Image 1 (tube, each protein chain N blue to C red):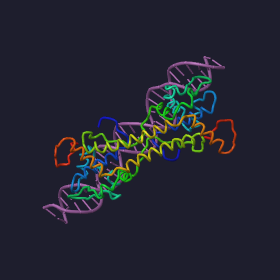
Image 2: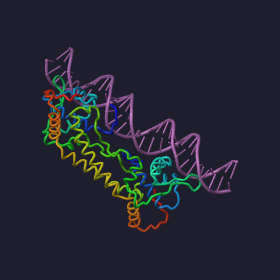
Image 3: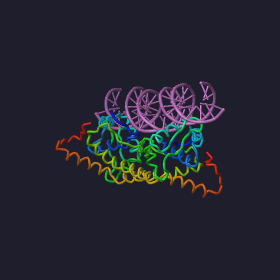
Image 4: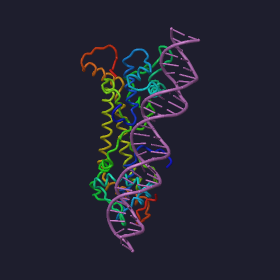
Length: 158
Length: 158
DNA sequence: ATTCATGTAACATGATCGGTTACATGAGAC
DNA sequence: GTCTCATGTAACCGATCATGTTACATGAAT
């Protein structure tokens, strides 16, 4: 909890959650996911709601309930997850809209809008080029490369 | 003042101010600049402070005081201005730092960090490729192309 | 019926940008 | 020297947003 908190870490958080679910067979409760992430179960449910609506995950109530993955990890990209979150604002920078009919402001905003749009597009493209399956494979590579603490438990020491 | 206020419009605002100053010979007061931008003189002084410290503009007090450009517009890029503002955060998205020793989080953050860094680099590069002089030229092109309301006054109808 | 887990609303918190007021500082004008 | 003008800042308010937390309703399995 030290350190710089950037604005919006929902994408990072939900990917963390998804990779956890991928390591577990059977439903995982919000409480367990929240414990792994060091946050609150309600926060988990909140960020998962969009993914459930998009059919990426499913949730069940009551005994034996919890969250399960409901998609092919190799066919879902990080951009799909981003959109499932509601496609939140990517850039912290923006234009003024105070004087839209001012030619000075028009010139400034035109120049900035190009740069902004390109940066957003690049980020979206990069997210679209990575699947959840590749992310999971990356995790497994780290797991084996890191020594052979061959735990069957999908623990992450968090 | 309706409408969506994006996070940080200081870059947009300060560019607006600089183009205004470029159209005026002699110092311009914060009050005039603020009126052109539809904001407050204190806000203008605040965003101009960094530019003054970097030597891009100069300020004078008292009668005949105000702000003047103190650099070659063709040698200063939008990225220079961005840095003079203190290089504020570009992206609204970020990582979690809750569990930095968790291998899942490491895998997630590594994937995201690449995409984030590339998008930031692209934006910085685009800003670095545009000089204030070109921005001013773009404004003049809009001014003449828009009809010939040949006002000598650098008004912007704001 | 009881217990468990999600689904949500409601409210608190912390950060940040923008706006505003207030006052001190300094540089001309008189 | 005094007055006026304009910057330089601090202090505070307000809105927005992500996050954290509590509370309670809903539904499913035991």
